[in-house]
Amino acid sequence: MTNPAIVLVSPDHVEFLADEFGRYSRDYDLHGATTFEDGARLVKRLDAVGDPIALMVVDSALRETTPIQTFGKWRQLVPTAKRVVVAHWDRFLADAPSLRAGLATGKYDAYLLMPRGVRDEEFHTAITELLSDWGSTVAEPEVETVRLVSPSGVPLTLAIRDFLDRMGMPHRTYDPATEVGREIVARYDGEASYPLVDSPYRELHAPSSVREVAAAVYGRPDDIDVDTVVDLCVVGAGPAGLAAAVYGSSEGLDTVVVEAEAVGGQAGTSSMIRNYLGFPRGISGMRLALRARNQALRFGTRFFTGWEVTSVDACAHGDHHVVRTDGGEIHARSVVVATGVRYRKLGIDRVEAMVGQGVFYGSAMSAARELEGQHVVVVGGGNSAGQAALHLARFARSVTILIRREALEETMSSYLVKEIDWNPRVSVRTGSEICDGGGEGRLGWLDIRHRTSGEVDRVEVGGLFLLLGAEPHCEWLPAGVTRDERGFVLTGRDVPTTEWVDGLPPANLATTVPGLFAVGDIRAGSMKRVAAASGEGASVVPLVHAWLAG
Image (tube, rainbow, N blue to C red):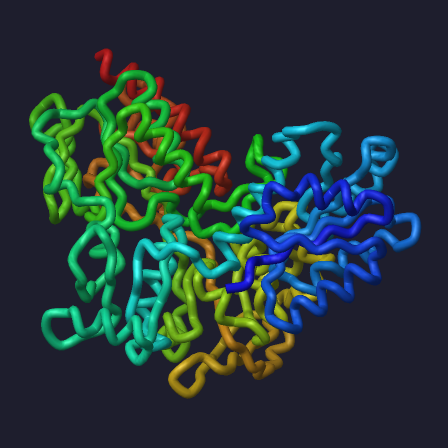
């Protein structure tokens, strides 16, 4: 197998860069050029013979002979490759004002100072983060923790792959007709149904749901001894729930987290979050979630994955709640609800019938690799939709963002709008909506209607990604929890005054059931941003302490 390539382009320092990047030479092939034109020819030649290109590094000195706009064209040469501009220390400060502006529009992924000495680990931290992101989203895995056997187009297979991507678990899918596929099928006891899942966590099996795979990997509540009353039970492992777990367990609370499927929630599907504090080059939702999970584990949090909470008996024993799942009960003195929201359904029968067959709810990162050369539509105007569109543009021929509003700026962060405006593969269609769709066994076309004129256009598509706003997921909560007209949980001063106790509202993140709190997207009035959810998860812990103190 050919090693991925790192391409280095510098008029004066290509040998220095090659020496500095020598530490990667075991796993990557290094290629050098002294002009932008030679570098472009090199990239095209590697791409033509099928050699994967992981990283392209360009010296800022080339801006004197190459217009700055040309730097952005590296994305068009190999859209999946990471792009870095490096500057010699003699010119770093002078070049910074103009080159940093390119980061805001996504022309390149990082602007770095060339190493000034040996072991410049700050420089190499940035490089390895970029290579790691490329490896997790583009490259085929070198190690397969999980192997799937399935024909193409099986919706459950795609859903399981998406779950494994979100959990950062290396996996590969084999057709039953391949050598590996035949070997795995031969080991299966009984008539094979697809997908088959081969992993170290459970004997070869044919799961009926993603939740079954999650339970096999991470265990279920009834597999773990929970015969004590814990201090805090967090329901949901998105950013809010993970933050509550980290702060709760780090401050001495006996904390458990119950998650039906993938740690990270909807945020875990984000290919790259660039506005999260402390990550100047951005971080994928998957990596953020896994780091938070590992942090919580270090402080003693126990995670129970694979069972959905079905109900909570509030104060069932006077001093604690009972959190019920189909797989067991958890007794807790306090409960934090952090279940987040679900995407709204499109509601068009013919399109809904093709979910998993070219139609996806959420960003479905695993499906992006299979859309090379095709046109894709993303429906939604929030940050998740923008992140999904930019990620898909690394693989698809073109991406259209479809929104009912008249401008993205009304609902999407400015940095994403700028990247979308610049990216030649992404276009925005405003004031429009899907009215029909279909295809032969898989989505092949969509009818798009302009909301003002009523005019309908039929477009050929290879994929449709639906990120349609939010619906709460809290029907399992006790009847005593007050909600707004849309079903979101009311907390603090948002609770109607008729339900205040002794003329006082509940605490800021407390519900109308004592000892039960709500954080993140499930809470009415919350800001639908990852950082805001994490902040609420951290902020709820002092309230839990106060409640436990009496």
